[in-house]
Amino acid sequence: MRLVFIGPPGAGKGTQCVRLTEFLGVPHLSTGDMLRDAVQAKTKVGRLAKKYMGRGQLVPDPVIIDLIGERLGRDDCAAGYLLDGFPRTVGQAESLDEYGRGAKQPLDFALELQVDEENLVSRLLERGREDDKEKVIRRRLIAYRKQTEPVAEYYQQQDILKRIDGNTTPETVFERIKAALVR
Ligand code: ADP
Image 1 (cartoon, helix red, strand yellow):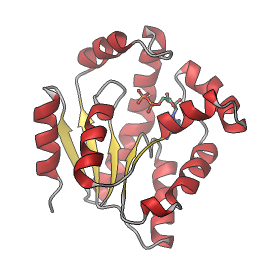
Image 2 (cartoon, helix red, strand yellow):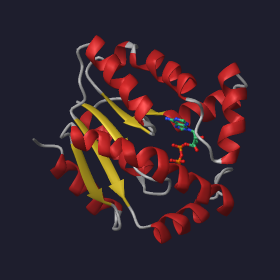
Image 3 (cartoon, helix red, strand yellow):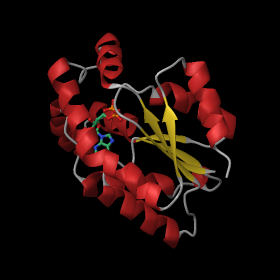
Image 4 (cartoon, helix red, strand yellow):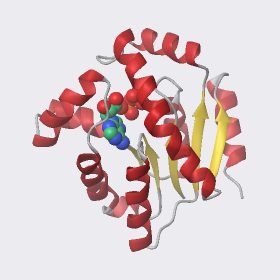
């Protein structure tokens, strides 16, 4: 199964991805994790990405499209994948569609995890990652609304979007996700 998982920072995507990847037996591809690895390893991509990440801005599309394109070409993605944090812009979604058409592998579903803003901010402040400072959080939420909500709309138009209410316990959210993954 080929899935895209989108949701604002703090929605609990990470937690659900761990469960879902095990349940489906497909690799979990998180662009956030891939970028943080690149920053750690001080690669060219990492040095470039660091500036954007620290400011709560998106890394430019061509950089991220290259990164994920390379990853999707590996053998372990043949039977499917769970994309976490990608696509984040309509441009990225269009590239993924082109890639899928080329490889004759369309997406099965796009999941959007929806959580109220006050819950998001308090969850993120508790987590305390490097980019989890209130000012940076607010910017990431703005970037989400401006750039990523249109991605949900894009998948809505393709009729593969499933919206999940994430304002509850991880167990209940996971049950809702499993229930949504049927046509
Ligand atoms: P969050 O969803 O909590 O913001 P992520 O780990 O998904 O966390 O992403 C952290 C940062 O990495 C983002 O703020 C952004 O700078 C960068 N990033 C991750 N995925 C993408 C992407 N698909 N396109 C552009 N930038 C990205």
